[in-house]
Image 1 (cartoon, rainbow, N blue to C red):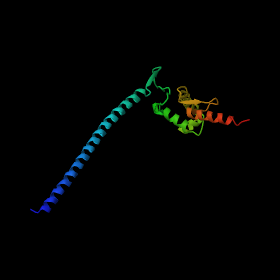
Image 2: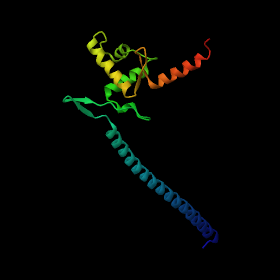
Image 3: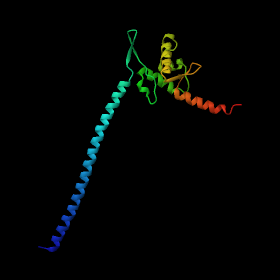
Image 4: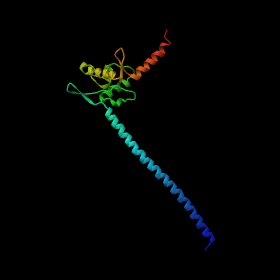
Amino acid sequence: MDPELLERITARCAELDEIEEQLAKQLAEVRAERDELAVAERVLERVSEQLADERAKAAPTPGQVGGRAVMLIPHRTPGMEETMLPPDYQHIFAAVRQAAGPVMARQVGEMLGVDVTVRAKLEPLRGRLVRLVDRGWLRKLPDGRFTTRLEQAAAQKAGGWLSRFRT
């Protein structure tokens, strides 16, 4: 046998052993990461289910008033999302929030497509706006306009800032 050829074969075997070792190490790392991802996925599913259960429990539920089903509007607490409101109240809240500033009930009705010329259609909307005020979602200004609580705070801050320059 040729000693040079035998040396080449031995060297190539050593190279292949080294590559095999590297690949085995990479395979172990891939499997470990895949296992971690599977655990993370299970935890995420569990947490998502818990959050969904909590939201369902905190969601407004219909109540009974005079034998008639009514939707209860939750009092706003810090961190509470407007998604906790019934859909029609979410639309009202969004209309007030999207307005350029404080708005009258008539303007909100126009934004929502309510026939504001008919008092019987405008007054229930005004009642819903007042209910949102009572529950802490909106603020009613002394002139009868409605605003979100954040807009009101910003307006007060700006008014306080401007008052320093008035003589």
